[in-house]
Amino acid sequence: METSLFSLSSPQTLTLKPNTHPLFNSHFYFPLSRRTPSSKPTHIRAAISRTKKEQTVETVKTNLENCFLVAAIKYEGFTVKQFQDLRRSLPENTKLLVAKNTLVYKAIEGTKWEALKPCMKGMNAWLFVHSEEIPTAIKPYRTFQKERKLEENDFTGAVFEGKFYGPGDFKALESMPTRAEIYAKMLGALQGPALGLVSTLQAPARDVLMVLKAYVKKLEDESGQ
Image 1 (cartoon, rainbow, N blue to C red):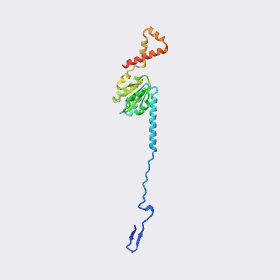
Image 2: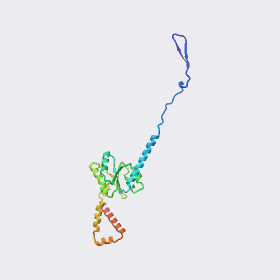
Image 3: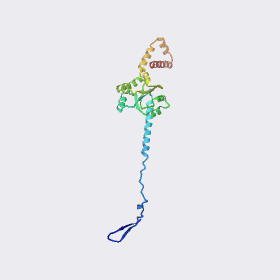
Image 4: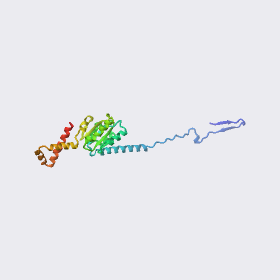
């Protein structure tokens, strides 16, 4: 296309020829540069998340070592301060951990603690008791629960000696005799007829131990009824 310019003072006509340079060609355009987002941050976040999950599973497994009881507490609605206060109120041999049910189940799968499966719903805080004194370990939470009016945040279940205890079964755990009480009852029983005591003591050490264990179990069973 040619364009003509006319001057009023001169009859001459100036003709402009179209510019054929590629930069001015109407068919030539510069595509908008789109920066492709790097996938590195996503990969890094995924790796960090996977590492944290693995660490949580290992932490749960560590807490299960030499553990006598594991209990789940409904955690939903707890404030950070409440959780910190509760942790400080627990005995030294009792640990409290907040972890996703899926990660806890991964740690207990295939073990005697797998009986905790009914607790795998909602949000839970997990209580690990590393002592035979079960009532002493449970009592601090009962006190905390009452003082803070957290009736809704009850135990959702526990496993003790491979057996599952539902929320309605905790009375049996909380009323268990302490070790000192068991020994006192056992001592009282051994102060019976001298003949029975002598015959027991004259038996092989293994048999004496079996008798004592059976008696302790009998006392525990009676206390749970």
